[in-house]
Length: 133
Length: 133
DNA sequence: GCAATTACGCACCTTTTGGTAACTATGAAA
DNA sequence: TTTCATAGTTACCAAAAGGTGCGTAATTGC
Image (tube, rainbow over all chains, first blue to last red; front, side, top):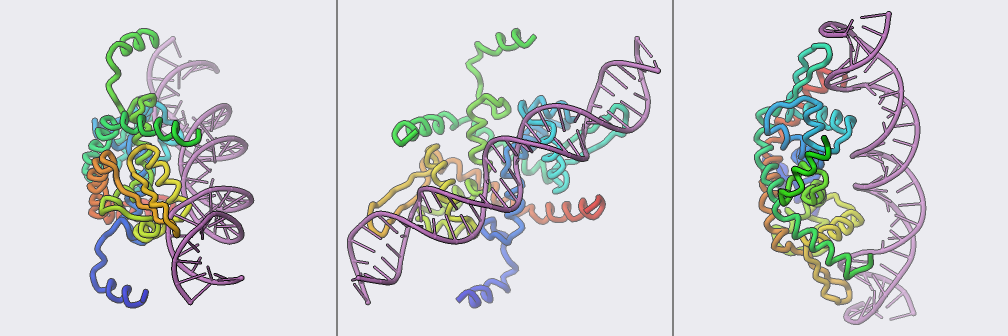
């Protein structure tokens, strides 16, 4: 049974599908599915920023997580890192074209959160009141 | 300095802002910023599903993570759990109205991943080739 | 000569996330 | 009487995420 479905699927130039664990689009989704990655991309949509500015914008990110996440985003081509090679250091981060295309839908997500968080809070309170805790 | 800015902010009915760590919309965003939550919401957009169907749809989720994530989504009012109280058990999961409003933008994210994963893969390969692995 | 500056890297630790396997309930069917 | 089906739960463990604090480079201004 498994063989036949595989044979049927094989010829069809493998349509990208986030529900397919072996599809590389899944990796792309996982990269985004992170609090800091989402916020960094959204923040950079406002324009290029350097390290200290990003820390201020995100509010409560640690230096370590900021650097780490920026490096992953740069590695995957979403963020561009420009080191001006000065002393003291001056490094600017900005969105690539691909990163920019992503930021548009992430902003929609931000708006969703800012619009509906009240409903979530209320539901959570109700749930916790009824059930244990 | 800190006092004065606080005093200035206090009266302004606190506009929701995901960049404000103390804003509850941040919690909403973090709830979504999870591989499994994203995929579950997207899957349920196709219609109500029960446990086994969701496991098949997501492909590689463990029973534990599925149950755990579904419980959190239900707690926050995004997913509705209907237990038909039969034996053997029959439990159906579906999206609430709020969950449904979220699924629309999540599907856009899915399409983004399916469209641009090739660019990410290429960038990653280039990056790893240049720098040390 | 000395301090300040900026964007890190590294070591160490705690917390969260996630996986596996074994166990549960219960009525219907064999 | 035993087995099956379904949607879990629990205990235990490994891996990843995340925080804190300290060290570093090299030029500018004191």
